[in-house]
Each structure stands twice: as C-alpha cells, then as structure tokens.
Image (tube, rainbow, N blue to C red):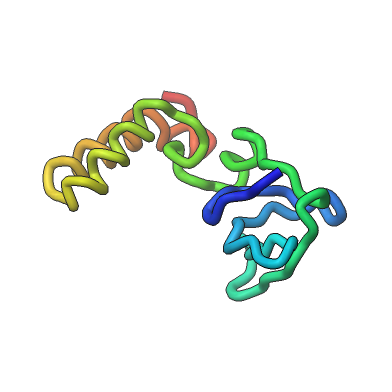
Length: 106
C-alpha cells in the first residue's frame, strides 16, 4: 500500500498511532502524535490506516475523522482563506462535535 503524507496510520509492531511525513526509498517516515519530534521509518507492510475511532480517540478534529460536513467546510475554509468560511467550519464543529469530543452528550 502507498501512504500519503498527512495520513494517520498505526504501526502494527508497536500499536502506536502516527502521521505519515513522507515515503522514501521503500520506507514510510512517520511522526508520533504524542511526543514532539519523535519520528521513525517503517516498512509499508508494518503500517495500516488508522480507523475513524482511533483518530477520534486521539483527539483529531472531526474533518480528519470522517465527518462529511466537516470535510466539506474545511475545504471551503482552505480555499477562502478564512473569514466567514472559518466561522462556519468552527461553528459546525462546536455544535455537532465538541460536546461528544469532551465526553458529554448534546
């Protein structure tokens, strides 16, 4: 499998969640989400894509975890470069996801 930079993966050898930095010379270079700067290289077959549940448990934003509306709003926000698009993305996240992300129900 080919992994894209920015993808979230699990190193099956250790069970650690990481973000792909780059793939070079048959190895995938990843960064640990829990500690600043820690990175390592792994063969592609030692990695698997992180599940939505694993990404959510790590505290990643919903647009990184599969919420279609968050993904669409984030795309608009990036293209627009801020302003109302940023407000819309953040408002949706707060209303739809913040309570559950904090362990509460709406």
